[in-house]
Image 1 (spheres, rainbow, N blue to C red):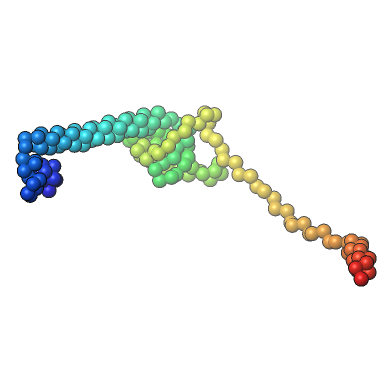
Image 2 (cartoon, rainbow, N blue to C red):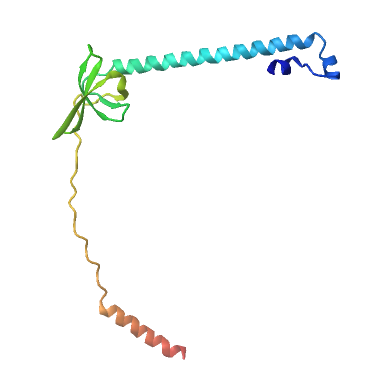
Length: 159
């Protein structure tokens, strides 16, 4: 169907007008441009994918003990140990009193951030003491009587 549209084959007067030699050349040119554009898109996509893979591999290779890491599953922690032979690392998570160690494949790393202090940062939990709610201040009787007096003074003036 596409070939029929590009060739311009039709019925009646259209077929006579397109019967000249020019329509075949334009069809070939259009087809060549489309094929080159599609091939160009595939090449560009593969080059960009290779670049992303190299950056990800560079990030994984540059990790060291003490770096902060986020895995693909969303687990955050610090690298406690790296095993190059197995291509794995041990991730330390939790508070200083309750730590957990989990072994992951290096391919599970999603984000990394080097630890600036060179040591593992301790997560600080602040305890906030709760205070009882204060009772609202009660209105004094003087204010209410003063307002009542003002109202009484205004009422006789209005009459």
